[in-house]
Length: 48
Length: 467
Image (cartoon, helix red, strand yellow):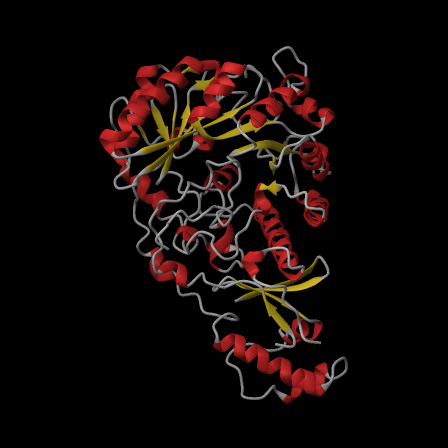
């Protein structure tokens, strides 16, 4: 491509295939306690 | 849907529904203002004519072909195919608990959302018996979830240290029988940390959150001990010690910024320069009538401060001095799945808070709001209807979120903030949203810069546009 560089795998759609297992951390428990960002949590599904 | 913006000297395009992040040249950036699906075979003549003032025709045509290719690959203007999963947003097992072992605090922080520790409920410590019942409630209601998170919170949890130790021991004694693993964490103001407490915490707690706002004058203005003096001198060395002792792993030094320190990037860097590598500094949550509250007029300054911070992080990375800022952490390849992203923190559904009176609330921020009292671990009462209401609080049931580009990153925001400011868990709080979106733009920019500068091997070899 001359004009565009895609920097990541853009795999959000594929993530639903084995998604929703619930093994990941509750988003508010790690540090924030007052404001929520979910995308900075780790996926803990080893089977993903 | 796409979201495009300029930051860090780059033109960044996020394809919202695939999660694709593209760094594009000026021509593509401008062309994307003029074209959208359904795409014709050739770039519309009117668009070519309009852009020909600044670009060569052959470049416009080749750029259009690239946009069509990305669209065909479903990484640009890709459709939102996730709403069907929201229909399955039914109540889930409870996997996380905020245990308010002390609704009491030895500090008198001006901005405390918890009424200086007692949540305006009267100062109380949790008994071991109540704590046990809370852990039993979690064990019984956690279904097939193996990892159970319990955060010892307050007030100041170290004021009830013996109960913390007893509860850790009790929880561990139940792990094998129930096939569960407790992940205990603690959030502390640090004033009561002693060496033996540090050793226990470092042995038993999978994460520790250490409260400090940054520079001494900033910290000591808001974080006051009961004697009226600031806490900085009491806690700084203790924090260094506990972090050293746990090998600089699994902790956060965590601060709050207010209108008094809109130059909060300096506070982040102060903490980093004191040797901490895991830092979170967050906007104050408070009644807008307070003079330290953040208001809309502060937003431009807050935005530029996040941009400053992002630049400082990139500079440190270039120097090999990496550190983590909680709200800029983003894994663009292996982050949480789309299903997790529909529903955010899970409060009132997967996550609850329990008080010394055995009362259950959707999370620590709802404590004391009787309209959100969910149940009681002593009597076993639990409001399944309210749980269902929280289970249904997802990005498609929140009007403003449904059409927001940031919906798969913040996942609908903080329900408690929404209720506190807007009177409804489903109505987004504008200032919180604006701040969150800015943080995400910065976080994505950092990842894009890391990829373009070839520093992050997750993104493969250094990518280049062929000019």
